[in-house]
Every structure is written in structure tokens, then in C-alpha cells.
Image 1 (cartoon, rainbow, N blue to C red):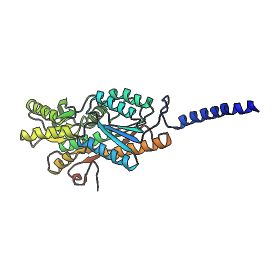
Image 2: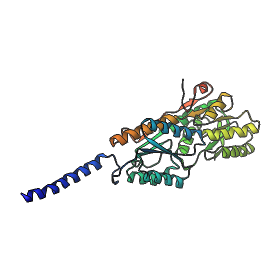
Image 3: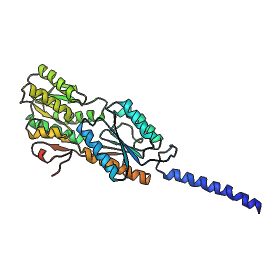
Image 4: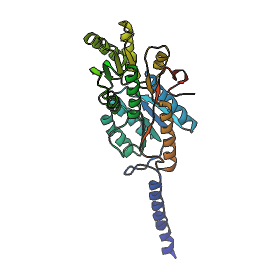
Length: 325
């Protein structure tokens, strides 16, 4: 009788151990990560909100997360991989439910996202991809190749398929910069009378684009067009052209920012390619919520959302990186 009573606690311990193991496997934690209590916190990390595109991402992600019942912590890495790494460490130390990340460089981001995964915290990337798969739960980006094709076609039409032009490219560490440039040239290189006389990086920066454009104008006074890898650089190029009194030069961008949309309506910049920034950020939060609740992804890791060309025909119906009509 006493022996049976002594066996009961041991049996119960085995049951409890098995139950605990079952909880680990169902928790949705990353394989190999130690189980840990999760907060109700979604950490949103983007480049500087001084750029309205990233501000739109932050606002949309935070609003959707709060709507779904989460607390939010919104941080900016300013395109500094070291700062980004520290902010991901903050998310880990706060035991975040999920990380929404517009990253600071494809290669430089992989180690930090892997660290979050190892801690059992899922990452949902927006806008910018990384090269490695399997460490982020989702990578949701604009279809940059499709968008660049739209932008290249619009630029060629505005140039009447001839003349000298320059290209301003984004950061070399950003996958999007290469994809957009290739997409542009897949179209533009088909026109033998379109001649690229300069191609320089302006690192997504308006002031740098202004300076680079001034230099290009001096070296190539016959230039008739500038195609930019984002709207911030397009604005810098247009400012340089305005200062030089060059109203004959076609400028196009990529993003769909409010300032460029306004410039299109005024007849200055000719066109841009709108990225649905708010939609993508909301999608990431919704998928993070589903993952937190179910422990598994409900969408494939790599996802792309088509872009929309904005020109003088539809600029009036664009608001907050979306066509409203």
C-alpha cells in the first residue's frame, strides 16, 4: 500500500514533463529555441521616419498592432546595422511577441534576425528582403521588378525614346537598388536612341542626389532625363534642375511619396512608381498575429505586392501611398 502511494508522485512527474514538452512543440517558438514567456509586445523597426515612406510603414504597423490588441515599440535604425542589431536585442530582452522589420541591409541583417529566431521571436520583414530564407517567417515586399518595368516604360515614353539620360541608384547594400536598376534597364536598353551617360549612387539621399545631379549637369549639358531609384533622390534631382533653370529634363522616381505626387500635379516630376507601404506593413502585422496565435505561418515566406504607376492622369487620387479612387 505504501509503495503504491510513493509511485504516484513519480508518475505525476512524468506526466507533467510530457505535458511541458508538448507545450514547447505547440508554442510556435522557433526550432531549437528555448521556450520562454512572451509579452504582448510587437516591436516595429524601420529606417528613419524623416522619410515619409518609412513613417507610413511605422504608422500603419503600429495602428494595426494596436487594433489587434498588442502593445507596440517603434524604433528607427537609421540604416545603421549596428543600431539595428541593438534594437533587435532590445526586442529579444523584452520577449517581444514579434518583430516587424524594414532592414538596414540584406547581408548585415541576417545574423540579427537569426538571433531573434534562436530566442523564439519571429521576424516579419517588409519593404527590403534579405538573401537568406528560413530565418524570417515572412518577407513581404513591393514587386520591385514589376514596378521598375512600369517606371522604365513611363520614362522612355516621356523621353520620346531618345536622348541622353542619367540614373541615380540607391544603396549598394540594399537589394531593392539592384532590382530596380535592372528592371529599368530591361526596358530602357531596348531603345537604341536612349543613351545613359552617367550612373551614380546617391544612396537614397536627397541632398546627395542634388549634388550628384549638379555634377552630372556640368559634365553632360545635353542631358534630357534622370531616372531615380527612389522618390527622395528624384526630389534632389529636380531641385538641382530647378536651380539650373532646366525645365527640359524629364525626372521620374519610385515610391509614391506625397511630395513627388504633389510635384507631378504641378507638372515638374513626370512620374513615380507607388509602393503600397501601408498595405504591406498591415499585412506583416496580420501575419504576425496569426503566427503568434497558431504557432505557424499562414503564408509563404516570400511575398510580393504589385506597384502602381503614378503620373498626371491619376496623381490626384493618390493619398498616403495608396490610390484611393
